[in-house]
Length: 94
Length: 265
Image 1 (cartoon, rainbow over the protein chains, first blue to last red):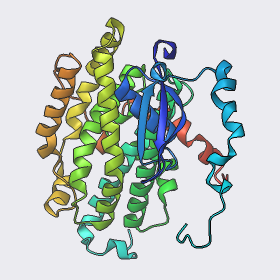
Image 2 (tube, rainbow over the protein chains, first blue to last red):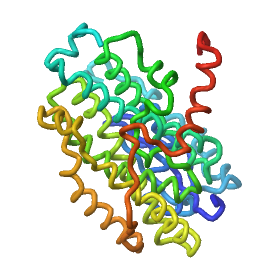
Image 3 (cartoon, one colour):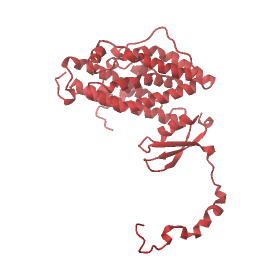
Image 4 (cartoon, chains in turn purple, blue):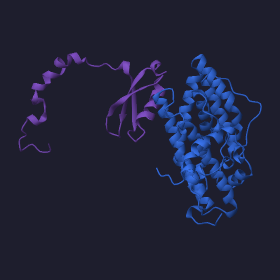
């Protein structure tokens, strides 16, 4: 049966103020039941206060083969981290 | 039965204790037997997600039955606890309604049973939160959110199956055809519950029928299913007249603690 059902990605907000985080995926025939399946599968132990679901086929992902050109250029740019800079003593509240 | 030994018993008139004990068994046994039936799906449901859904409902109901049978044991005031009531009572002493002891059948039959029972239990427990017997009101308040979710999930499945494929629709029709005869018993009032209702301890079941019928009609309409009819209701669970199914269920459920009374988890 499940191979007839689309796959859905599940995102859970663990508590107010935090972002939703990807926790896994489930099968369900439609969005309403996907939400309930996500609740029954991933929030049994008080893991969350809010659930997002999205059709897995609607997720646009980067190509692992392009990892080099996408991500490696950032390796040599340490000055993009705030810790790269010395903060003058006169600057307060940082 | 001994006299009042627990503070939780305060406010219960002596002449109401026997009725209240019987009533708590009715509520506790409904939850216990339905939980046991649902737990048999564990590892056998059509898909993993549904397996978890049914197990979650079974665990919710098991928790409710533990609280209700524990309250019953306290009212009884003797040596029996919730476990003794669950595992060392014989079939004739069970007070659950006939609907919850019906076999799981296929998934549609299980969903039909859950939909009809939860559609009754949700508004009933909503009323029960106003019980003048505080322990019962507290149990109902805790259980109400669980039961509301059960009713919602089961209704969603009734709609999917009824308005699904030719086969899922036929199976839903068969499930309704089987279970509809057990609906009237859910709303029966007798001398025991009428007395408790007059004291504000128990809700009036009969007064909730119109709300139940409206909810069922709405969901069945969404599911494109016809309103069920059955010429004659079947009842008897509240006085211990059970179907053969309950004996088989208890044989499985009670086997271990009866065979090994000292067994520990």
